Length: 240
Ligand code: VGL
Ligand code: ZN
Image 1 (cartoon, rainbow, N blue to C red):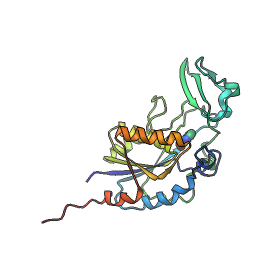
Image 2: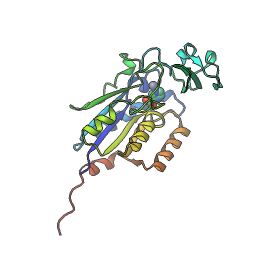
Image 3: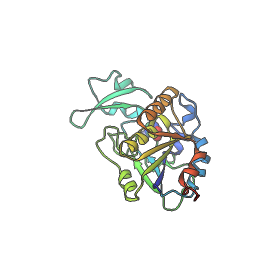
Image 4: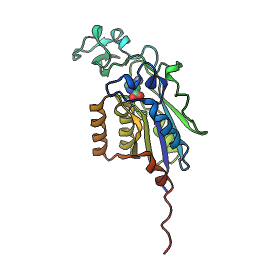
């Protein structure tokens, strides 16, 4: 029987009703809708590991539009940092001439703030593991495995391997950003990777569709939450 991990991505207050609430983003999806679905999933028997990831930024983080003017602009940046706004894609010059592309967001998930807390109605089973990401001032990290430039790695791969995990089931917020990057890296690292479609909500419709298509092409399996129970408890075929 393959070993399975549920990875719940960034179901944090800011993405539900805080500064980066998905319901105010272009796709107008409601992050709160995943909470009940995810609670049904975490309660299933058969998980070998449940992981909760947290976007966990310092106040001076490079992804916050309000901080853009405090960093150095790269000559390739089409948008000037002095007039950069939320959703703009800018290019920074950081740490001795490294080029760093970045989409700007409102300040969100500041370490220790209410917005960074897991939503209060999310059920956290005993023994589950929490992985924080995006903790460095000048590096963003959509994926729970690596930062966006693959300079640093979190402990997630190590944790999955130490539990002998073969398959990951990814859900949470946001479909086109952190779920997408986490699932893509999970797949690249050799885990059989599933994305639980009805347990995800996203930022932008076009980007959601693109992300799902790319996942399909890369061999990630999209699945509905009501199909998971039987996958986790596949029985031996009956004797004739
Ligand atoms: C996320 C935008 C910025 C996410 C995190 O969790 O999807 N999106 N930081
Ligand atoms: Zn973030």
